[in-house]
Image 1 (cartoon, helix red, strand yellow):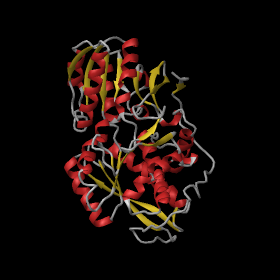
Image 2 (tube, rainbow, N blue to C red):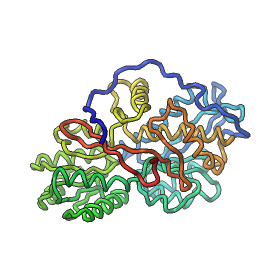
Image 3 (tube, helix red, strand yellow):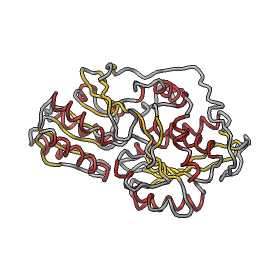
Length: 407
């Protein structure tokens, strides 16, 4: 455990942060894909394929906002250098509605029309489809935003896994939940492929630690609007703890339904849902006893509050709180720019991937929201991870020893 942090108001102002010159280095050759803009910067198209409509649209737009914020900052700072030439990123976004078959179609379109050397996909189903495409011509670097460990099993040589893998979370989380609330668990997770993977991991760990496992009352968080029935069936199992989670907004509705039906136990929340977003829908009292992802604004690294300040300066003090989707993808685009600089190319995905570890280790402190340690052979960006347990209205830090992560 670390020191606890009160749930506090977001920062409202900051001074100007200078980012120019962060990504300078020597290289050997580079080619833009989108011509040259009015400022004389050559344009590199970066693809984004994710949910921009439907139930997961808010999640997809957070990922998009993170890379767009980084791309804008890089351009405003004069771009990044490759072999004496200066480049900026143009984000080309396509909506796949969280459907893997639409992910594949959108990726083909990006490759044909926009010549994107890097494409970011923020869900495991789409990532698996794209892993079958990106090592064939035209090759491209897959920036995979999913914490599901199984996407590493493909050993895709042209992939970067941006967030920490989630299979380190369950053991400490279950221990905390059982110690505070009891050993009976009921499940109301989302039924996506990602949700099923999380459910299997939590269920296995809960029984391993001697707990009693209730029935799985999972529902599709992307299409369901009334969770009363599913929650009622779960509470019939008389649980001490509920395992829930999906996008933040429907997850908050599940919590509201549970509290309205009298549930006072613990909430074990998968990492897709974010506390600060849920607080827009339910009061902090409803989240008492919950365990989940640590909010960016008070995350225990030097760079997190600096990032939050830049975020509010750019989007306004009344903007929704920055989430880890925004922050991780923001940092990832800077890492990709740094890797291109080190590789001396904006178009060769194999050369860019080969310099990703060095890029992670030498990423300037100004854009290190999280203290990344490097990139493994299978593409996992490694770092220490802290999650949060809400106790008396404060975030209590729990360090997660993520497999493959920093010691």
